[in-house]
Length: 279
Ligand code: C5P
Image 1 (cartoon, rainbow, N blue to C red):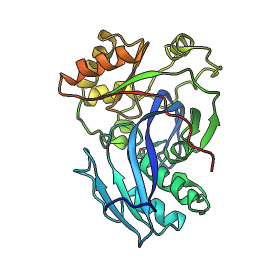
Image 2 (cartoon, helix red, strand yellow; image 1 turned 180 degrees about the vertical axis):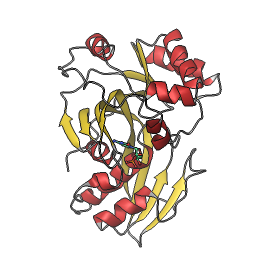
Image 3 (cartoon, rainbow, N blue to C red; image 1 turned 180 degrees about the horizontal axis):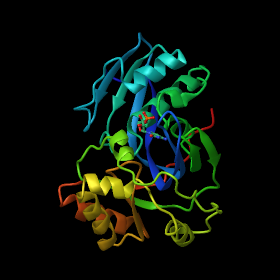
């Protein structure tokens, strides 16, 4: 699909769980979470043009992602009543704990809104992370993902994302959990600076991290490499295997991303994403 003047472009930023506590499980098997979520400028890109509903996938991680009817972008378009030719440029690894299909579906919903459609009720039907990805702002996420509390802006963050090129199945990581009744997050204050954020994060966890390391021990090496290369803080996002590091300067983040890439891991140095324009 060549892009024309009528195309609308929407970023699908990477979703990062800076902290994620598993606080319970519903009768239907879904887990109750308490998570501090933010978004990075690194991400996929969704483009739509007028035409009958269709999906084309390109980009470095297009392989292994089917563009069939089950693709979350098409399901989101149908839910929002959007008829359009959709192009998904997949820049981020799939099944990697940073939003993936949910972030892409959320970008389709934002595009539908830009084209005058109403946001569908209960977007979490598409995926637990879809509501927070539609908002794409720093937020505390509770319930199974549908309860959102927007947070005051976070301090600027210089981030590295690294994935050891392992796709993990979210249900399989949840199934490995030992405990599902952990305490909620401590109260989330307004963070004056990165030091305050890191101090707060140090008293939190990603409860899925030990289960994911159990399934893929290389994740522990990625986290160690973040710290060895100067990260003030390192943690796995979501159900993994992508890990995030917080660095004090863009230059240290870029040097760390280059050092981690030498292991053969996918890496990117990135920043906090600006909030999307209000729809
Ligand atoms: O909602 P989504 O399709 O992204 O979730 C994938 C799987 O992850 C679910 O089928 C469920 O097994 C697990 N999950 C969960 N609790 C959540 C979110 C996801 O158990 N809050």
